[in-house]
Length: 316
Image 1 (cartoon, rainbow, N blue to C red):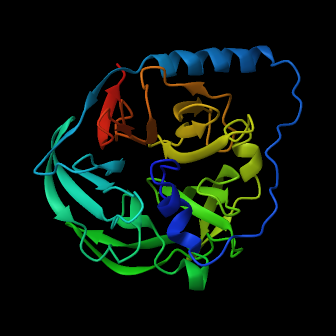
Image 2 (image 1 turned 180 degrees about the vertical axis):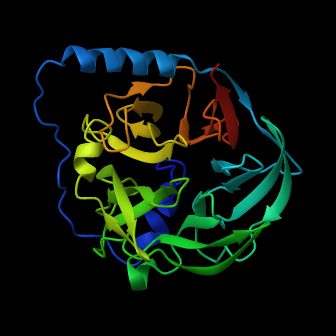
């Protein structure tokens, strides 16, 4: 359910639809034919590839006082707090936690996020500058067909928890399984998967929604903005945005292991260009998250012992 599609199959697609096999037809992910790129597009692609290649030296993040699986990181906009969740393996009680920053790769574990966790899966935290906290929970999917929740965060505690209105398509089998709120709180980037009874979605794409009053409305130009990101007929999920929203990092799953890619754009109103893989990040990796200065990229990785840990890579 969270940003990691493969980490815990049955729990991910969710114990979501525990009772029944979903009967939806796949709406295929087939990219339209493309013409040769213009000189400007070619230059932008080269710039993206160079930017992605600038990340180097991945290193594990040490959460002092915590030794279990750590997945789906998010660093608060002031850089002082790390949010993450525990394992989402089948049968696990997946919960949200927080840790305070010591340095870029060291955080001190502070415990569960009070008010956020339930008996269901609770994962994939993000937060805007005003303290509006968003996360994924399967606690009411059977009744509401909704999984994106929000609340007010303060010092390790969450209040006024409720479904984020306007996000869910309210169609059984279509599941919003991760999200990230923009720094200004006005734009929600989320992944929506089509589940037809298996543990992995038949299709998965990123979507943009904008705040209108007290609810979110899917952007009319979402498909245009994310056409390159959602292309290639692959499963695309787990978006993370740079503070200025001009760079997007995301996970793509094709025939092999998931990869982390990035794409760029010149302004918030323009579509993202062709993505490039962050080559320094290898292995079974997912769920990127950016630092406030845009230099660091955090993500989770499955280690040789099968445990998921958070890592950081950086660029100059």
